[in-house]
Amino acid sequence: MIEIKPHRIGRCQVSVPGSKSYTHRTLIAAALSDGPCTVRNPLRSQDTLLTLAALEKMGTVVADREQTIEIHGLNGRFKLCRESIYLANSGTSMRLLAGVAALGEGAYMLTGTPRMYHRPIAHLLEALNRLGIGARAVDGNGCPPVEIPGGQAAGGSVAINCSVSSQFLSSLLLMAPCTQKGMSITVSHGPVSRPYVDMTVDILERFGIRVQRDRYTRFDVAGSQTYRAGDYTVEPDASQAGYFWGAAAITGGSVTVKGVSVDSSQGDVGLARVFGEMGCRVEHGPEGITVTGGDLRAVTVDMADMPDMVPTLAVVAAFADGTTVIENVSHLKAKESDRLASTCAELKKMGIVAYAEDDRLLVTGGTLHGADIQTYDDHRIAMSFAMAGLVVPRVKILEEHCVEKSFPTFWEAWETLYAG
Image (cartoon, rainbow, N blue to C red; front, side, top):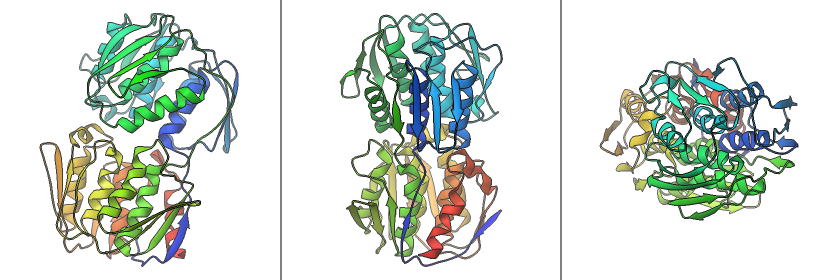
């Protein structure tokens, strides 16, 4: 447990680690490449290290030097792995690897924690089946653990339902260039979280893969392409930047997150714009994006493209005048926790009216009081409610180590705010 001490922020600059989403995708692309790759500024967190360990089990040669990770690619073909591959509760690892595992040989068993076994993956398995790949949910319930047979990935045309997760589409896109026939992928529903699709396409193009697309409805990737080995740098994580911008928003302080640009493909960079609509001043400079707090007012906002930032916005909304309506967020029920229920429960514990209905989350600003915050083993709940403790006395974050899933140095970085 950690107690957050109230503090009025002045002006400060904060550095955040490499993007979790970009790190996952870059590691996988490097493992599929035609030679040695150096990945710079990778995020070293529980989730990304699970992906790295899985790639090693699948035959990739890895030299982890902490500041950089060196990977010798297997030219689009993974090796036999006789033991199960444990992915804990990393949904990104599970979904992205479930597709590319079909490029290997033998059968791959992907397992995880009990919570992982409630996270849906059926739509991806169905798409793989339509491509002639005998992927299956071991328990027959459309959730992990899953078994993925290698040697059956020839490519072809397929439709994919992305109403639950855009990662299903990203999984197909990552494997497509290494199939013989390539893939023509039609999105039948969704996708939610569209910027994450843009990140995947960005990584493909950086590694020399050609992708043709019609917005978010159709993607054509020629087969027998080669991921190009080389030197790749992961940009700072806009998701992690949001907690520091939120801290500025509710305290009236000014925080610059270094290295984050509005030109990023990361959709979560848009949270700064939302804070601007709520009354903050937002500045885009050569060093990064700066948010300065102001008199906060409620907004109605579609967060389908920034789902990971919903708990962050909800906590900031608790300090705003009026009722904030956060729309298109029903898919958050299938995250590390049911994030709609978790966020509402902890806001109510602090005296705030918050509830979910249909596809919306509603938060009415008010007077907050201290509470022991249950994190539900969800890193984003812990980091979001840390913001409230900067204003409200006696806010304690239980099981604070859950932040290691995505931001192992979060509490050290948080201390930067007390120096400003």
